[in-house]
Image (cartoon, rainbow, N blue to C red; front, top):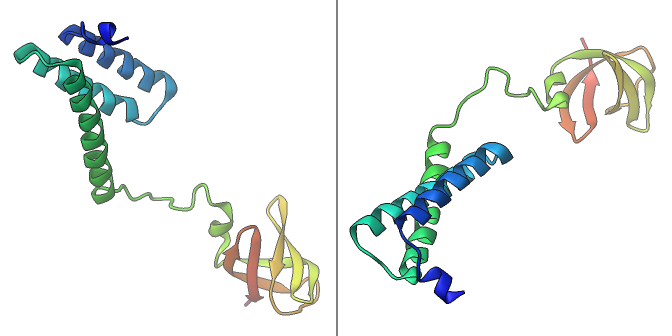
Length: 149
């Protein structure tokens, strides 16, 4: 195995970069393999200038991956995109503030309400069926409600 690694040259790293880029596209890895490929390109460029032992090549490759991933993570945190629909995939959060009619009465703090095409469990003060309730919070799949207006 050591004999295999001792014959690494620059074009091996460039080939690895291409393979990692293709893997990122095929697997949808959200740029993870792109940063690994970028690190491989850096090692390939260094190998064009100065021949290094395979140990140093892998050391630079690993450090390059860690550096690029940390830099990307910091960039994403500071340049976070805001969405015009922040609760798009959080269905229950979309119901906060809305008023619904109780399908089943709230007894001992629990009841059910029909929301569009589904029935949700609710928690709040005891109320009879048909009462208007307003969603004030969400706890998992349970809507926290108060008497509606």
